[in-house]
Length: 207
Image (cartoon, rainbow, N blue to C red):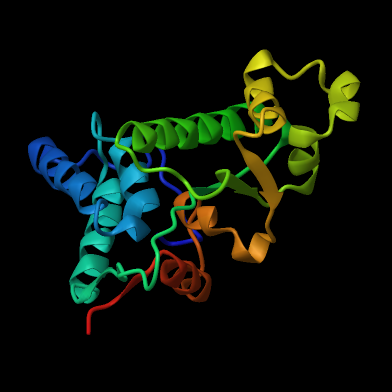
């Protein structure tokens, strides 16, 4: 998406073909399964399916042009050499501290559900799942009980993460903002940054 522009309701004249918009955007939702790098852009245009404007349609066409230009790209899945080891990792974004409980709780719950599903299938993780967070304060809060008195305003949902860390079911570790892969799913990025994070998702040109 263009970093200098933002989409909003009623930001232009209404798009004349509502059915076409919904069909194309609905199809793009399936494309994100193999093109995770377009997930943020597709999520944005999905928010206006009830009343799209010409600007929203222009954003959709930009996504289509990107897909056309990267048609030879796909997710690279390598065969593991030696013994198989599974380690679940996820990346969480915390912007204002007031959103800490929501973002970390949802990410923590999701990785716990995936771990439980794999256990039911007889697949055991080789280590405790890791949640990587680029907010140093949030990382400390998730593991340090000394901060408890300062965070009484944070609702109980947030303490789900703290509880899982205390039980040894989850580790929260700090990662630099530069290496925070979750950025590609949360905001429009300049081209160099976008391409760097896309490579981290293992979305590459097919040989």
